[in-house]
Structures are given as structure tokens and as C-alpha cells.
Image (cartoon, rainbow, N blue to C red; front, side):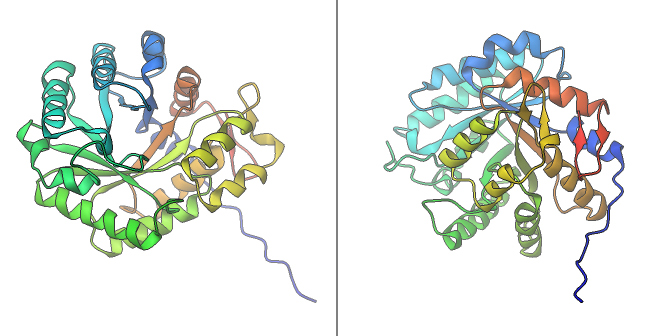
Length: 304
């Protein structure tokens, strides 16, 4: 008779989960500026807040949002989709104003899911080669990571581009962070991190997670953003996942990441929360977890 293999229970120190939450960065869009004052109840001063750049959003709107983030006492990191940059002057002026007027010390460079570039930059590597970031006083940069691939780009090309960006950033003397697309299971991210470390990539590796949201919202964004096989986890979690008025949070995957971080030192460096329109809701969740206001359950998760 074949015995069924049962994965042994792993004892997780709740303090490791809380520590991961305290170090977590968070994302907002320009519409969330109205909630920045209220968010100060939940986020500590200096928290890193990434500011997304939505379609049809102007560079001025991004700069104004970054200034508001700084005035609220947080560190702003604007998204810069390089395919929307019309020319070299647009890039140089944006970076200069971001640094000198909005207090920006780091940017997230992404290609942007646009079929054709508006100007000379098709890839992030094109911008990294210009030296413009350092010339404008930037010493830190975030780059996109795709552990589960991309729906419109071959995996081999993504892996090549990730290593090229890491090398170019290192040569430019930039402290580098790879911030990943969000996912719903830890294993693809952990495998990706091990591959990068094995290839000698020393950049900070940060896991992108979906903040608390409804299942419908998570599926909508996951399909739009091209989340890979881990999307299956959305339909496989027990009812205990339902928290915060029916929202589904990242408890299971965050617990697995806290476990991996405790047992594999140096593999990755932190987590980041995408809010999907629920900025304040995610801020409150993050504060609760950061303060240890949760209980581990028997289904390898925790209840906030």
C-alpha cells in the first residue's frame, strides 16, 4: 500500500513575518495622493513608496505625486516606463526635476508594455548605457524582475535582459534592486533568486506581492499583468484566506518567504506590496502585520 507523503509542519517565528512586513515597500498611484495624510497613521516615516506611471499619465503628474510623498515623510520611487520617453531631453529633464524638486533618490526603470517606443529607448538597458542617472545624482535604481516570465517575451530573452541590466547597473556604480512582478506562490520566486545568485548577481532581490483585495480584482490584475502559473493558487486557498471584509491577502506566500529568508540567508532581501487601488487598506494590513497583530493558523498561513 502506497503511503501518502505529508509535508511536515514548519514552525515559523512570527517575529520573522513581522520583520519582513516592517521592511516592506509599498506602491501607490497618483489618485492615492489624497490618502497620503491618512496613511501616516499606518506607515512609519521614511517608508519607501513607489509611484506608478499609468497610461496617459503625464510626467508632471508623477513628479507632483513624488513631491507629495516626500512632504508626507516617505521616500518616493517613481516608475519610469522608458518606451514613453520621447527623447533624451525628456529623460534628462524628468530626472533633474525628480531629484531637485521632488526629493527623489531612486527610480524604477521599466520598459513599459507599449508596442512601439515613443523615442530612442526600447529597453531599460538603452537608458542605463546613457549614464544619465548618475549625471543627475542618482546612486540607486530599481529594475523589474519576472520570475514567472512575461506573456509576450520569451523566457530566455527575459533572463538575458535581467543579467544585462544587472551588469550595466553595476558598471555604472548604481546600488540595484530587482523588484518582481507579483505572484501567488513563493517557489517560482525562490528558484529565480537562486539562479541569479548562482550567476553572481548581487543586486537586492525584492518579492512583489499582491496586497489585500477581492478575488475578482486579483484575477483581473493578474491576467492584465501576465502573472504566470502561480495564479492557480488564487483558486486553491481555503476559506480562511478571506480577511478584511472579504479581501484575500498575501499571508500564505509571505509566510513561505519568511521561512525561506530565515533558512537561506542572503537569498533575497525583502518584499513589496502592490495595492490595486486599495492603498489605505494595504497600509493598514501592513501596520497590523508589522506590529505582530496576527495569529498563525494550521493551514500554513496567518490570520490578521
